[in-house]
Structures are given as structure tokens and as C-alpha cells.
Image (cartoon, rainbow, N blue to C red; front, side, top):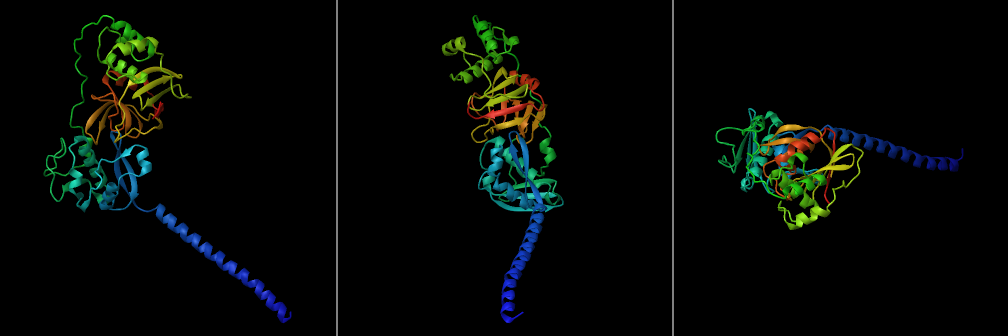
Length: 373
């Protein structure tokens, strides 16, 4: 081979050699990235506890210590979690002063911001969040809460922090009796009420056995559900407008078509729940869903359990005839069911309706929560 040919051959080989070097480098980089990804996938995590409806809900965050967990708690849920109804009751701006874990006791010192506000339910919820989040990491089994270095006294309704740490078991143990249905009041028989009740039965708002000529809780709830559906004033009174609309009203129909034989729709704007069987509304129920600060998230869910007596750990109260369908969000009975959204995210029902919905529901039953109907 002459010198010119040798030069040409060398020139051709140099790009091939460079390509091999770059290919080798890319392989090394890819391998390194895969190691990093594997390391991240196996990175240690801590559980951070928020709320979903009336119950606690945990998420995982990076970390190993109780301090890591509390710092993640103070950051709050992500936007994606919030869309699923995950909420925090810890006030924004709360600062962590210190966290120590000694012999299974986690001592958490928070700034004064944590203690502000007089809403007893909110105070209990934020206490539960701290206790659940601080236990677990570093072997902590109980929590001592401090505010600006001192023990908060008389702050949490029904819970004393003086001289005793708080455990998850303590919060999960009911401290109040199961509520009894309110005593029935003697009501007068009202002339002309029977025809109104019969009409409410025909339209799916009242049960036949509740036709009793008396303006009791069942009739008032049915009238309120009717007023909500028809867009009337929500006063539960059988006034002229309500009587007039009853004459021309039609039985409500489902907003969606479903393949399931039995299902439910919750209409957030109208504050009613539709119990549906074979695509026919069999009952319209007056409910109260999540308040503006703790809204009930729209979406399609399924009933995953039926619990006659469900204890709310964060709010330390009984939820009777609970039918959960989205984490801690459930149909359940509560004494206060106003005609507007007022719950922590759940679907509240009055006692005259809660057992009926409990019996109607099936595990696996679809529940569609609709924002605009």
C-alpha cells in the first residue's frame, strides 16, 4: 500500500474509533443512571399522615427519621393528592422547632402557629396527624407534643397532654358512647299532609311507610331533598311554591347511564344523593357534602366496605351506618346535616335515611360524585 492509501485508511478509521468511544461512554452513562434509578426506587421512606374525609390517610415521603416525617407533614399534601380529597389540618406556616426520639418517645416541639384557632375538630385532627406521623420512624411508639417548648394544656377537646404522651392506640379507642337516635316527639296529625306525602312517595323522595299525616323528620328530609332537586328555597317547609311544584314535578332520572344494576350518584351542586337501580332512581336523599375548605372530590369510585359503627380517629366521634367509597370518604349518619355543604368531605345523612342507604349499598357498588348536575 502506498503512503497516500495508508493516510486515507487512517483517516477513515478515526471516526469509527471516536464512535466506539462515544458508544462506550453512553453505555457507562446509561448504566450509571440505571444504578441511580434503582437506588432511588429503594430509597428509604417514611409515612406521613393526612386526612381523607373523616379518617386518617397515609402517603410515603423520602426520609428515615421522625424529623424527616414531621417536616414532610408541614409541607402538606401534593396537588395530585388534594384532588383525591387528601387534606391537612395543620395550619400553614407552622414551624418545627425540634424533634427528638428517646426510648420510643418522640418529643415534637412546634411553633405557636400550630395551636391557633378554636375549632375543636380541626385541633383534634392536627393532633392526630402529628401523633400518627411521629410514631414509627426511629422506633417511636408515643408522642409528647410541645408548643414553643411548653406543654399545651386544655387545647384539645377531650384530650389531656399533661404528664402523659399520646399513642395511636389511645386515639383509636372510642371515648364517647355510640349515639342513640333522637327521641321521637309527639307530633299532631295535619289535615292535607297525607296527599303531599303520597306525592313524595310517587316521586321517590319518601318511603311508603313514612306516610303518617305528620310533619316529622322523614317528611322534612324528603321535602328538603325535593326542594334541592327542583331548585326551590331549602327550608323543609311545605309552602305554596313547594306544593305547586309537587303537582307538576317528575321523578328524577340519573345523570349517567351505568352498567351496574345498583349504583349511586352524589350531586354536589344540588346536595342530594340518587340511589339508582336498573337505571331508575329509587330514592332521592338529602345530604351534606364537603365544605369549601374540605370539598368532596368528584370522580367515580366503588363502595369497598360497610361499617355499622365507624370510629373517626381524627375527630373522635362515631360515624353510624358508614358506607365508605373513597378512602375515609363515606356515606354516614351524623346529627348535623344542614342543607348546604358542611362536612369534612364525607356525605352526611340524617338518621332517618342512613340505615336505608346502608342496606341499599353493596360492596363494589359504583358511586359517581358529580360537581355540576
